[in-house]
Length: 474
Image (tube, rainbow, N blue to C red; front, side, top):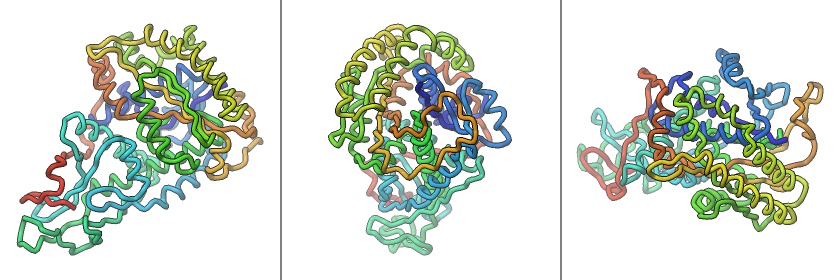
């Protein structure tokens, strides 16, 4: 049996799209649609879905009743609280650092690179004082829109941490482009406003502090769900921005390198081949990639109502094509579990070839024709072998005093686990191309008009190192 572990941020996204939870920023809508698509794929291609029962206490019962087909796992009964502690220690050990406008600490620098976006910080005048602000380094509107979507997704992490009563620190080390620490009384070099010697600066803006605190919580949750997935032998379907950090974390701790994750995201999301198997030279990681239609687009047109999409997904999941696909994915997982990747490769390739035929049929039957063609996304599974996950922190012992759900079988058997990899940039572009279907998916979104949200600003690359009367480079 296969089962997918989804996080509460994904479930909140689904509820925002259905109109049952308010949305703080319009910039989060497209990422929420990607999260909905993620959840739909879990429904259609997995036998069971599990989640951690750690939602806001005041709304816990409502959350569970809203998703009756999900098995919610008690943190204490399954020793997940111990894993949560491990994730917190790791996330709190990160040392955010911005120098010359860019993140230079490895974790956040590589995350920004993996997201294929460009962020910078500049000194901007406000009330006669220079404040350090966060901006998108971009020339074209699509790049700026992408930054707005990604920034909104990251900022949403801060709200999540506050609601759970686990505030994270926004402390960040600041260095100017010359490597000089930025402290109280710092003078902005070559500032054009005020006297020629420069003007006293203020501190980093609230947006930068909130952004850093959000990144720390993003790391915390991504690590927690990665370790929980290893412990539960589950495949992870996380909120898209967390999936990106998970890829980074796995590449570091499982010792197969950041370039592997980067190449997976870039190659598997753009290759002309429909279904692939990639075997890492060290024999630690295998990957399969499948082109699928955007089921959210098809279901949006079929129902005309985003609040009915989940019910409709469960109605079609027992159609023969999905039953066959689940059997094929189950067999791929079995082959990876029972043999070394190198020896499993040939057998897996045969099953993936069969799955290719299935996915072709799915694209024909569930593909929605738009002016830009049929919106397509990639279901990319990266299988981390038992040898690979040995690099992760040691898991707690299982609590066999409680009665385990039937599907959580053979937990003590050494196995690896799958993580779903996505190219968020490509997925956002696909959402933008969905036309009427995208409008339907966003039709029930309720905007919180009282919410304080970060308003993205743009910095054109050709002016990034220039001074003006209104701003200076960091």
